[in-house]
Length: 499
Image 1 (tube, rainbow, N blue to C red):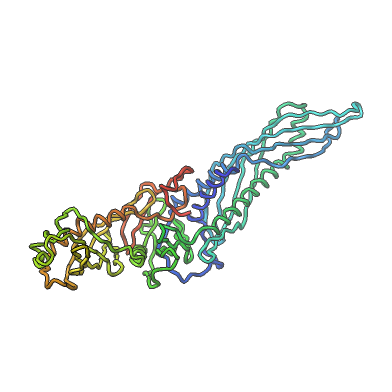
Image 2 (image 1 turned 60 degrees about the vertical axis):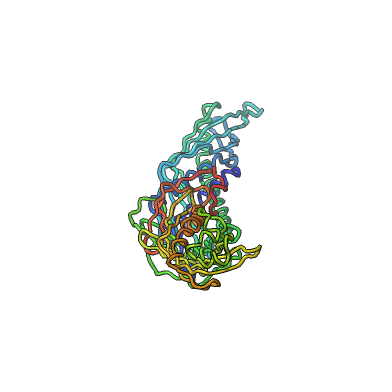
């Protein structure tokens, strides 16, 4: 198959693996890790995956060339005839129905009522005692395969956080074939049927089994090469190591990944994250194909990585109310500031003092941010810190889906301000409160929203797009319920996604 078809097939099958090739087997590696990102694929999602797999499998295998077939046989009156078939090519396959079932031994995928069409060239030669010279002829023929049944039984095991695919069984059974010979003597049709019907059936069955086996081997190699972390940017990565045993039910498949953000060096920001045991599926009657849930610890780990990387401090010298960037604007708020530094320009240095606390409740994401705001005066070319105000900021976040990214926005709910230290005497905090509110609303929140709207990619196979996604908040989790579409044409710059 060509390279494009091979990649499309690999991506399609990758989603099949992601969605339903997980079995509760004794060979699964037990994990001491907890999973904070869970995925649930509903019956609708499994059906979508199964249909896509069959479509890509057929398109990647066609055209499929079979080995040449030779045979000698005796024809009444004529005698011994040497027959040969060459250029035997399966050029189309149509699957009438298919099904997928889960069981203790793995996943059974069955395509039934399939038909296939073949083209081939035929030739024969023979000699008789009446005509001592060789008599030969050649032509073409078409074959229709009917009632073909193809099945495979596969399993996948968790091997130290990565996936290993195992082909447990694979079979192909052809019920009947019909052959149409173009040209040749009248006896040739029956001769080809008698000589080659069984061989053609065996060749078709063997070729399809071989192709499936080759595909499973390639897919297993692909799965083994999947990274255990997804790079978000130069200094943040998402740990996507598979943990625990997947859970199978009659209506869904559930699996977990570690899901915590780490620094670029792969070192987790902490090892104290824990969650309560719970069922992943927020709605057993979900009408969407896939459900991806992110525990609040995922967001807290991201905040911790940014905090540890010193990305949570800013120096502000321009805000919409620029009067607050000169001591004159503070004349009536902090009179002594203006008296000591009249008409001097100012900086406001904001530093988050600990990783933000994120709690997900029903219908809302609550965030608490502890920060220091240091007032600096630019006096005679020197930066002079004059006071530090401690802030406890309480904000509310919302989540949205943009393409395959989980994005969001934040709004200020309330805050408290207290004086931490001052080089200019006591400050009247009730007067400063209004200025702090302006700074938070006009600079701090817009700045956070600028970055939150970029979001981060959800772990999906390449080529898959979320469609009609919905977001719910429940049990300390943000859950995305969505249908999926698949495209072979995708821009990696627009889809910064896993796999």
